[in-house]
Length: 139
Length: 139
DNA sequence: GTGCTTGCAAAGCTTTTGCAGACCA
DNA sequence: TGGTCTGCAAAAGCTTTGCAAGCAC
Image (cartoon, rainbow over the protein chains, first blue to last red):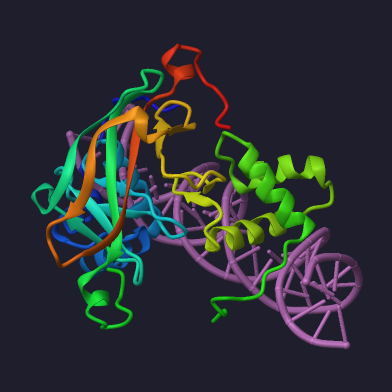
């Protein structure tokens, strides 16, 4: 069992990983992020990327995105927003609250389940795929 | 590339997998379902369970549930409903539409993303964990 | 009989972990 | 200086796949 409030250090690796993730508008997998981070720090290992993504996620500094049948993806933007997944290319697009309508403040009426939060995701076609530009890369 | 409308057979294995999944109110992983199905059909292999879950999912007969950092889980109930994940034990609870309020008909205002569907999930504490019954099994 | 399915086992992929040395505070 | 962190590589865990035999239609 790991201590909840362990002393953390902001190493060069952790700094670069967080900065790059925040700078990106896409939602990279650990492996993709590793490739990107390696441009600024060639020696960094994939294991370190995984370890730091976990630390940053537990610290609430980044989001972890579930992905059906695919690798986990990460998001450096923790402001409230929705995600939309393209059914054709798998790309994940961000949607700001003002871009979405019809959602009130979902809540559970059945008191048996104590909801503390909720998540709304969309699925459909991203601009590239809707425009018949065929397959596009996911990040 | 696989043909979209391939001729499928309802084998004994496929029948049992679908029946068991529909009968269950929990959302088993492929491995858990394998253990359950094996009670009715001892010789069935895990690979067959995976293959059939995929076939059934592509045929729209079951749901595949994303799970962060965990195995994929399956749902034999394809009626419209929401899922709530317990933050403590990981169990997934079903919530019927009438048990949830505040959701209108979410839609994307930004025409750049052509949404064809959406998914709303809750997170919080399931009855068992909220009742301080400590850890409970996930299925 | 045809060709979709199965069981078995090996392979594939993503993610985690052990260890010794390096580094941050 | 002490405890955290890193790179490396091996291991773990879930899922997919090749193959020859079996079965549904």
